[in-house]
Length: 212
Image (cartoon, rainbow, N blue to C red):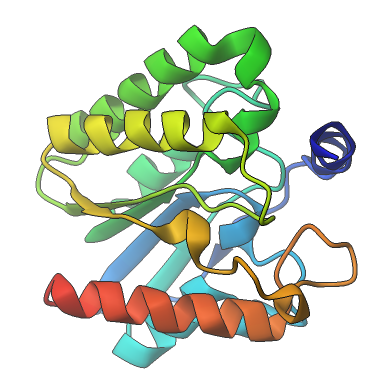
């Protein structure tokens, strides 16, 4: 099952133009470094994905260069200029969400040390380049009730790296759509509109705890 899902997600891992709202003077700018679950694959429109819902609720301007199939290592060909972190850094947001790690489960058996190292490298790079912003790191999402051991391992690496850079950390996100097949799109891999709405509710609850 995981191998088949990985193949589909890898095929989906082509770059698209980042979606960015207009940036009004004084408006809070929020960037997202994520994969298909933050890009909104499976939603009927960008406005239905969780990232856009939480931004609309708060009047935030959204910059979302998230990419299908990408991980800290998985399906990633660029490290440095032209990668998603470089786009986020250039955008100079006020708040940054990092929601990466799901797809690295598909590379875990062959690249676990590289995944762990790249998590630290990416988060450290983002903090060093954007020292004055608020960074919110989210436990990597997961898409099935079946959970390989790598899910918890990668989540632990992400949590520890978030702590090392002084970022906020939102735990438990890998469970947010568990047990709700009706929240999945027809591909069986990504949430549908109802699934993203449920994720937005959970994210709003967590952000309230952070004063956002």
